[in-house]
Image (cartoon, one colour):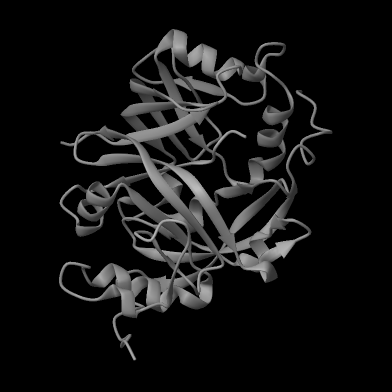
Amino acid sequence: MTPNIMVVSFNPQRHTYKSIKERKVFSINVPSINLVTRTDYCALVSGKNSYKSEIFELFYGENKNVPMIQECPICAECKVIQEVSLADHELVIGEVINNYIDESCLTGKHPDIQKIKPFAFTMPDNHYWANGETLGKARGVGKNYKIT
Amino acid sequence: MTPNIMVVSFNPQRHTYKSIKERKVFSINVPSINLVTRTDYCALVSGKNSYKSEIFELFYGENKNVPMIQECPICAECKVIQEVSLADHELVIGEVINNYIDESCLTGKHPDIQKIKPFAFTMPDNHYWANGETLGKARGVGKNYKIT
């Protein structure tokens, strides 16, 4: 099966990047809106000077160097397969080794955004945003469109 | 000034990718929720067999090979600076040559997501989603959090 790929970018001066560079693994953890306070707290402190690992409960999958967050409904355990140096950021490309999902966030066999309740972040206004209402089905709402 | 970078991935069999490969330029156009029908129609037809250029009104910036969409509140004109071949997708890394924004979508000097009204797309349930309510200020809502 074709592997799932995650692409993330980092300021190479950050502690997070230095840790990934050393271990060649990382995780992607999707927080729900009820975790916004704790997620924001993670942005306010550096892992260099504090124990971020006490903010959430951690768990481990296949690779014991990849902590993941128990409270997050979706976690992806990744290994670095490639890096690209850009102007002032490093692009880290990871292959997903395993996915972990809270079963209460599935509808049938698939993740359901209305149960996961993720949030977005915008800059430079620096705000968090919940997901909103549905606008309809993709490959559906445009079916009756006619070029005029 | 450090250039802004956009990273996009393509199935290399698609007409869109073949066109970018040839021209070494592309544009990113952010549609508002009122454009969801026309945007979805673009997903239903291939540029190989139809004139997608008739769905929206186009305009050109610096590079005459980069059409952009007049109706979209934000458009980024990009040139390809690097490519990375992944398992079944091509990662295309572009430097932004110019940004175009509808002035009615600014608050002060900055883009405002509540005026832009973009939407998200989820798979495999295939739905479009509006942006929702704000959850508060980043580097703000977590300020009073204390690890217990």
